Length: 252
Image: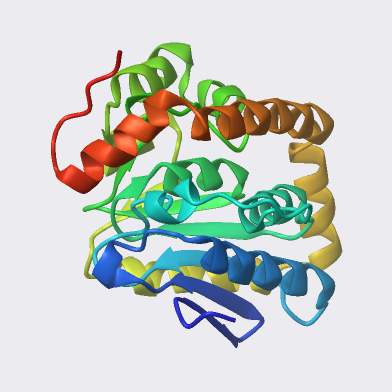
């Protein structure tokens, strides 16, 4: 378990904190592996009734660590990012997204698999995949239009629009917005409400609400194929080079 992912359990609630504030909580493969393990452990431990994902410092997460992802891997094993996305998508128990700050890329797309999403006022939501030479991930090209509408989803995906916390509330991406001062207390209180509810009713309610899992899984697999292909594309190579050289990307 990497120390860049902090996992703490109390009062039947596990809190998974993305703990890399010096890198704006950018997520690398080791961090994905740790989060996948935490979700899998949560799913099999009947003593834990709720899981919260949040970020340390000012960011929820700035998304994937592009330098880490650009190195690739020849292993036949399921990549850690795929393990994480599978774990959060198939988890049968409640998952809560506590968005303390900017949620970028996977920071937004993972929220579409959370059952409850709460935001602090400074939070923003963006999915700048196209600008990086990539495509949406985690079935977000299916789930985000369903959540906020096609027009807003296209604005987010195709132009890189970042939603404020209030806009995310207005469009239905988050359930509640709290001030930064009260955010942690309020989200902990709501996690306890979930943890103290009837577990069988909670599990079955989630099953009923997320009845289209097979379609989501199929869509996620298609996105993953396109995403892997884009990681090998000249567009992505240019986006990484531009980021490292601190210049605008020039796509040919």
